[in-house]
Length: 149
Image 1 (cartoon, rainbow, N blue to C red):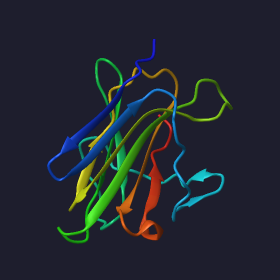
Image 2: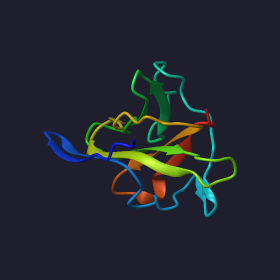
Image 3: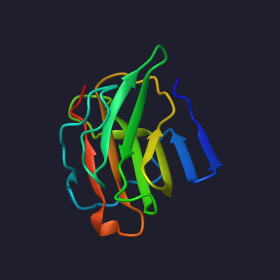
Image 4: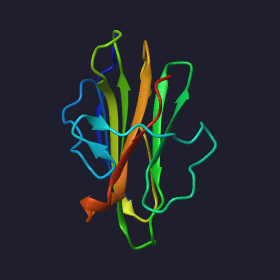
């Protein structure tokens, strides 16, 4: 059974959106991706934090008793920068089938940003993708994905 969760929560410094279930919008191609999908790059190990990189997203997953959490963060260039980060949990239901987004969270706020998806019971391989960077400069945003696990 797949949980279908939709939440919209206002927070003091920005906006957090969380969605679980089939993807309602595919991420637009950004720098660091191509028309065939996001560029697969190494991501931070769980709990290790992110590698130093201003305006570059990093993504990782944490497994809990109920499933998988996708986590991403972007370090802002300065505290006054409006920063965006989106994290997607993608699963592959059968070998060779397309990757399906089953959970997604987006956050926009001033300064550095970290966001977590709802916990998803995932069967099969899982990929966590993060898109982020300066919210007002989409050309400077990039996408990274973890290797399948």
